[in-house]
Image 1 (cartoon, rainbow, N blue to C red):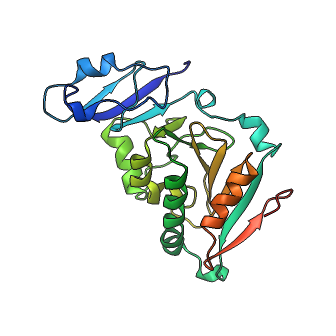
Image 2 (cartoon, rainbow, N blue to C red):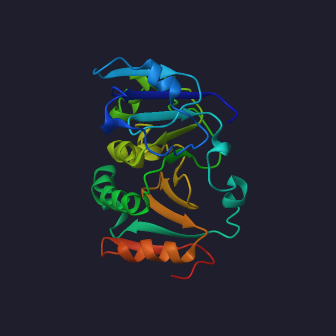
Image 3 (cartoon, one colour):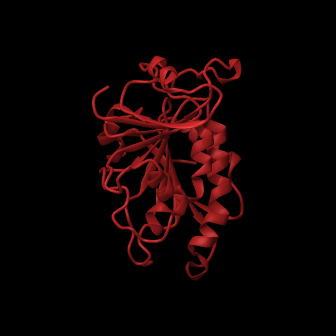
Length: 244
């Protein structure tokens, strides 16, 4: 893999039979270096730059986003052979705020991720262009900002986060708030986030306009996910060329 790979992780004693690494979401990596970094029986933080196997305790910060995505970014942005639907709150605009958004959309997000998860990795990146993850030092998105600070990752980091399902859900409230909340002013929105499964051409798009869109090249999968998550709380607006 090209690009700089930084992995932050909490690992247990690898001799423990219950802590064997899972099948790697990034299958070309290996775990030998990780084993050599771990002290017996104690949890400790590990930071290094090398090729390793992603375990359930790791988060990867990867600059080479293109090498991770299971789809062609340019083709997807042109909507070629892609289908989509926007989940929008069934409320008046003056009733929609960040608190209501998180309350309504976080269960939706968790349901979709849990349904699609296969034990492999999830990728979080800016949709069309990689920008600094944090363009400021404002007091918002506490969990996500703390993740970066605790592991000495610069606010100016450009690239993708690669996470397990559990880590993705742990940071879900901050991630779905991200484009709207990075700037404290409501009129200032930041980049949308695309969240995708490592092996499936399916994207959960987090919009700064306080809605979540689902996109896929697989219309049957898209329809299945939509059916399982259709409630009176949301208005579904299909993309052009998408029939629900």
